[in-house]
Image (cartoon, rainbow, N blue to C red):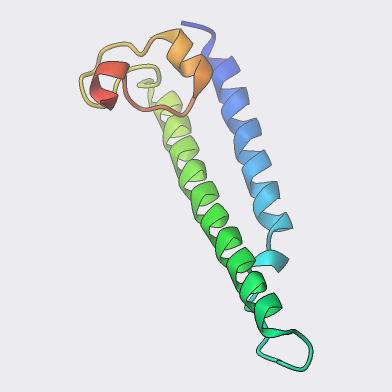
Length: 109
């Protein structure tokens, strides 16, 4: 397995990137104003759709941050790199693709 410190660095960098993206998206998640004089009906619908997409992106980022936090906890406990379900070693290629992955390929399906 590749050096665990490399995976930890990648996980921390990914977490920071996701947290930064979350901060940048605050304005897009604000409630859409109801003032019909300022925004036409279709423009308001478009703004509401964009707000919903921003909220969905926020939920995905939060779930990914949670997965990263779990992976970091597995590193600290010495369980990182082993499947959370069957306890077999997760191949390095799989961890290289997604360092937060908690399961081997067999258990993921």
